[in-house]
Length: 273
Image (cartoon, rainbow, N blue to C red; front, side, top):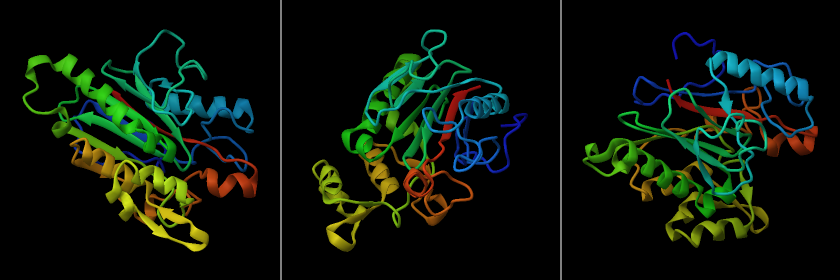
């Protein structure tokens, strides 16, 4: 990321991606929004001041040297291939929860504040992908849909040069999300995952009142492993990655929305330089 004016609190994925693959995860630091959106809230819509969000997005663009492509995320499974038409990065123009791209200088971006951001690339740096994986999207297959689109793009770009399954050459990075000590869910959420994978029961711990604590990152790792992706980096379900329990660094919808009346959004970005 040499030459980019990244805030020192932002996270740069530590993974063996090709040199021309760039990625970053913003934190709540480096913006102009006032509490409870302080300070780098990148989320629209929200109750934050629109001018502040615009300034924050401009700061991110200046740091990257490129304009992030934001999607209107709906907790679904749809993946779009970027780039689209000019202006498609405006809010509401792209309704999807995941994207793929093989065009240089197009920044795939997902916004999160407890949901899990998942970034993909292949060892040759042929293409990139980004997915917004809340529990609904994860249970319904957003990572599977995103990977199939990514796999198809890599195969189209690489042609006969692909000598092994794309999954075997895929790198995944999981960003911060609500952690396993904070993500309390009802039995219906657990059943949605067990219906797909009975062995996912190890990702849940019982708590009071018939509810469960869920390990969202571990559930994502199981989904990626089932696709044949073994090279997974970033969020290992430890406390340091929990958005709820690291209030000075991360926004958290679950922690802040009821207590403070709103929460900001962070962004995970990946692109080919």
